[in-house]
Image (tube, rainbow, N blue to C red):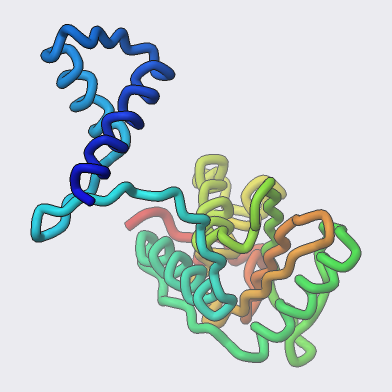
Length: 217
């Protein structure tokens, strides 16, 4: 078995060396060994505790369950909020439901627009995100949309606090008075991932930006 494995490995190595453009001279044992060492590094052998080796296979990324996705998104929210010394958010089941229902509506119609929904008759904030891929979009993690929203910080005018279409996701994300968030996620027939985040109390209120959008602390 071991001999067969070695012969097979050498055959694979020689084929790969040829494809990779390495010149292998059968009479040059040293060159062959160098080529094999390079190939082994390229194929990323992983050695076990007992010295055995196995090839690392390209496993398909696993899809992220909705509950895990929500927790990832929450953790990323709070990571960024901590950089501005504002309180952490908590997931709210009702907000989760509202966000999920709207995410499914966006996916069903393949449209990208705000809902205008309220929470208990009061204003709530809403951030949207859309992602597409040739593979399964459900492998995308919950921190991806949050990072996208937070990156708007680069365009925020700290000298003139206020609302802007270019920074509205960021300002809602770190809005100090917001205490709860709900996350929804759904996939359209065109393989687009729609993500909805609803916030309560809602942010981006005119006149309150300076008090609720503090700089990095």
